[in-house]
Amino acid sequence: MISSNKAFKETNIVSDLKTEYNPKEAFSRNLGWITNSEAEKLSTFKVAIAGMGGVGGHHAEVLARLGITHFHLSDFDCFELGNFNRQNGATVSNIGKQKLDVISQKILDINPKAQITKFPQGVNFDNLDQFLEGVDLYCDGLDYFVLEIREKLFRKLRDKNIPGITVAPIGMGAAMLVFTKDSMSFDNYFGMHTSSNITEKALRFLIGLAPSFQQTKYLVQKSNMNFSNKKAPSLPMGCYLSAGVLGGLALKILLKRGKVLTAPHSLHFDIYNNNLIHKKIFFGYRNPLQQIKFFIMKIQTKV
Image (cartoon, helix red, strand yellow):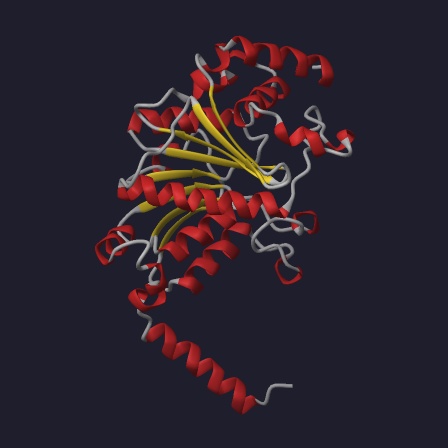
């Protein structure tokens, strides 16, 4: 047991640390890969992340440790046992707690000077403008099957000239897409707006995210992939990889450093296959090969 005297001392240490907290020292090991002036600049940007589940919580932590200070975060869900294999904050002590509150507190524990605007109802058609107000970058953490609001959100991003990043955990890998004002639009790339059926939209989303389909080589129980029931397997490796990839992209976009591949370009890194596959999907969803994949998947999934 911890004595009351020791506990009192530890509480004082934490209190003193918050009072004396120095972000420059906290994130000093980032220097070298970024300059002092770039570190200062990162602390001025505002990043929005919708969804604190499979990847959103990991995205938030990576960006906080990078030195991002201003956040718009959204989620309406609570942690449950089924989240334990992959989600940041999913622990026994957090069962039943709001994901948004847990991740927000984690960011504040990393940087007490962080400024977080919380959207506890999640993102919806009514609060998109407020969610994106003053935002420099959007990072997609929405559940895979949340598609209609995702379509609307990416249209808003294009209208407001805000870059958006989607890095999805697929198998033991991470699939990446970036949308900007100069890239192919989200609608023209995925074509989800051409389908009214949610299952068809989910198929189009997958075909666009991972056009190489390299992850299917090691899917051992296909019955666990059920688009009609909004069910898909996910691994912790993919979620952590996705957050690392997103952090690198965020740094490059915000600091305007180096070339960023934007849609219709996609990258899919898979550690199981020892592969990094770069695809450029000419004409987006209208590409004949994408149309064939969609047709085959519709037959296989009996949509």
